[in-house]
Image (cartoon, rainbow, N blue to C red; front, side):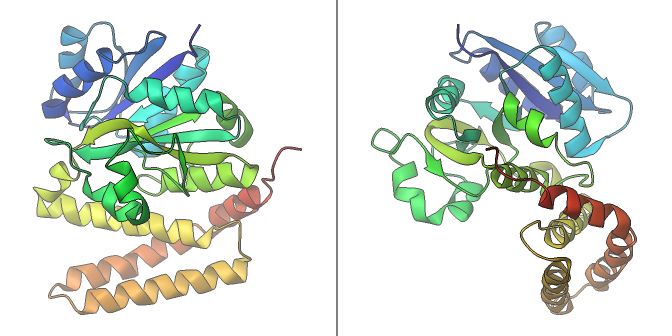
Length: 305
């Protein structure tokens, strides 16, 4: 029998995308599949819509917006309870092609060292590579545009949480997504931890999804500012907790990152960005104890013998 896969769709007020996302997942050309929607306290009727339109999808309703890490962790825990061999995290603003999952699992089963796999992301409305793909993998674009002749897998540093497939063994060895991140950088952090444990992260050219990026954030200036704040906060956490550097090296990297962002902010016309960066430092560094414990914990990870 094919490996058991649970697809976890984390949703927050994504009603406008759920019809296409859920329909495409349920039409996936893969038999041993269970779909879970985790809803982060949406107020747009998302839960009611899915329960009525897609009764075969299991729904977990969080009473508050738990963020990307803990929201997905709720789905991961449920997937592991269901004895999933793979857990796939998928954004609601995606639609998947029929063979997307079959190709991910085919590569995962063919290479024991691969623990994390990602699909190639295309524009939501077309077959062109989207902005994440072109930015993250500039050296592979010709190959990614021609999946029929591409390699089965391309080893990469990380794949985006919009579509990330993870073997059960990886969770059992390194834990779930780190909730020190509310949103952003948690999947990069997870890939870094997995690689330190000896797992390979792979992009699968033959697995294709369509992803609409940034729509909810870009439409509202206040939401965009909140997004930028959260993303920068997570970047600082990621920089200061690298297990590949000493604490002193991490502090140096942190300072360089802050100086770069402050210089960029001062070129702008709004003082809000500068004050956000200053406020952020108190928030991040005020959590120094937890940051140090994370650095120690991640530094202790080593490959299985």
